[in-house]
Image (cartoon, rainbow, N blue to C red):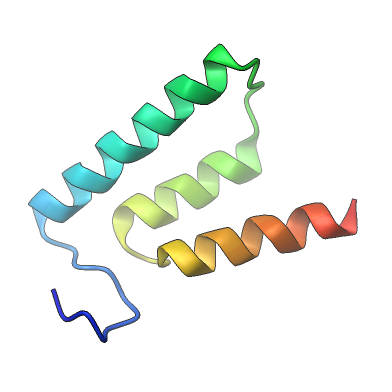
Length: 68
């Protein structure tokens, strides 16, 4: 992976690593009382696929909750 690239690697290994990380985060959130959020899950899917970076994901979530 090019450390200067803003896009994620889309290799099967990289996708699987992001999927596992997302599942672990979801499991931790469920233990804290997480309720299914379709917008968050859609962003998770785009992150896992490599369509958005971690920074873009974070910014999208911060922007969403600033409006509320």
